[in-house]
Amino acid sequence: MKIAIMGAMREEIEPILAALGNYTIEKYAGNIYYHAEYAGHELIIAYSKIGKVFSAITATIMLERYGAKALLFSGVAGGISKDLKIGDLIMASALCQHDVDITAFGHPEGFIPESFVMIESDEDMRSLASEIAVDMGVDLYEGIIATGDQFVASSERKEWIEKTFNADALEMEGTSVACVCQNFGVPFFILRAISDAADGDAGMDFDTFLKSSAQVSAKFILEMVKRI
Ligand SMILES: Nc1ncnc2c(CN3C[C@H](CSc4cnccn4)[C@@H](O)C3)c[nH]c12
Image 1 (tube, rainbow, N blue to C red):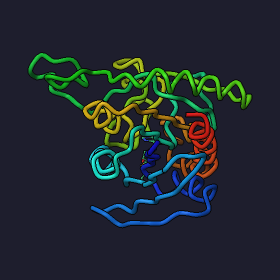
Image 2 (image 1 turned 180 degrees about the vertical axis):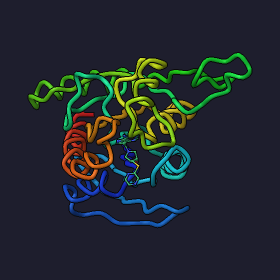
Image 3 (image 1 turned 90 degrees about the vertical axis):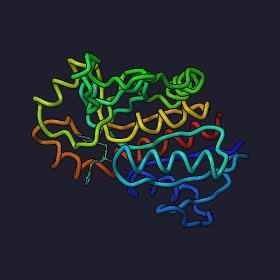
């Protein structure tokens, strides 16, 4: 099967490319697409660049141009839930956009007409991931991931997101990728390893833990590819 693996930042896919070793590259529409074979699957790998716009473009290209039949996102996130510490893995059960606000028309936060606040991720891939986590002996959390076009580095904003969406983690690309996959009817799996707590220390923690947390997520995603 042709499987798309996405990240937002170069550092989020570098561990995957390093593990693959052999791949070809193709530049297209502002991204570099890496083609590889792994565990009997064809992989198409790319990092989008930061944010919902760029990640929506890359996800669309992965599906429309390259014909991916499943999309796995590997990256890092800010932790909201007190159960999540730096380096922990969380997979999205559902995702929402915390910076969408048309409440002036009586809509709830994060709601867009003819759509929904929450996008549910693929159940089969989540149950496969739970099995893999047991086999690997790693903790894998499952929860709501909130997406917005801002690096959250304030407890006030983090607590608002938690209160408003019951979110467990936050980042800047998962929901846009989820929305693209849902529109195309392609199963998706959003996995993040915590790099910071989206609070006053977030910037420093992020710089310190980006590489190690990206590695944790990438290792798990490659196990997913073996078992899909
Ligand atoms: N607290 C947080 N808030 C929002 N998102 C995150 C993430 C997840 N990624 C990392 C990166 C931060 S912006 C960026 C910009 N320049 C350099 C590095 N990162 C963006 O792709 C979203 C980890 N912690 C987060």
